[in-house]
Image 1 (cartoon, rainbow, N blue to C red):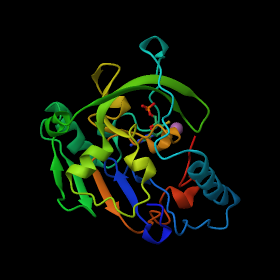
Image 2: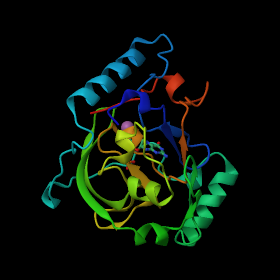
Image 3: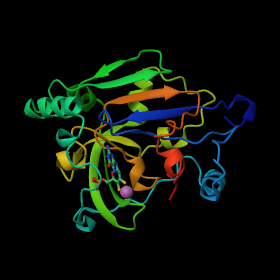
Length: 238
Ligand SMILES: Nc1nc2c(c(=O)[nH]1)N[C@H]1C(S)=C(S)[C@@H](COP(=O)(O)O)O[C@H]1N2
Ligand SMILES: [Mo]
């Protein structure tokens, strides 16, 4: 991993409910994503470089105790059943009615065994519970307890080949696919049945309603309608 020749450009795209978009989870080592001429996007490269220089890949975000848990607002999308896309809304309401028993998470792309996982499958992996501070880019923060399976565990089960990747945030021990919040099933408003928690990044990377994870080796900014070209940082380390 220290040999820069081995480091290829990899990324992960995680898709939420259809029409809810996708986000980029990692940075790239040999070549950084474009800045689109924006000063702010040049700042992303700077934050990325500083993070990689100052923090070891395994530096943990601070964890708190149960006493520190605060009220936790739900923001952005709070019910995919209400999405303007009638098909996506209908599918979500059907899952919800069946307590997500027939919901599946798809893992695709650069893995040896692409496939799907039910909630029960995900709960069979060793779980991790962490109490962390969520930091939204809009200025608020809140502390909550999250329970789920480390993303790394699921990707390794799917046959992710780790050599040469720069996926520090993806493989980070606190990056989890959470199905529980504050000791209960993850509420609808907070991303049921499954959301990401990326504790080393600002809140918008913790995508709710995750349905599909695609491991890629090319930086894909989602095009003209994508988050990155519309002003969101591709890297938002905290
Ligand atoms: N699918 C989806 N995920 C999302 C969002 C969203 O609108 N839709 N908002 C993001 C932002 S900006 C924040 S701060 C957190 C908010 O999570 P919460 O609603 O559990 O507080 O979710 C992130 N994940
Ligand atoms: Mo946010």
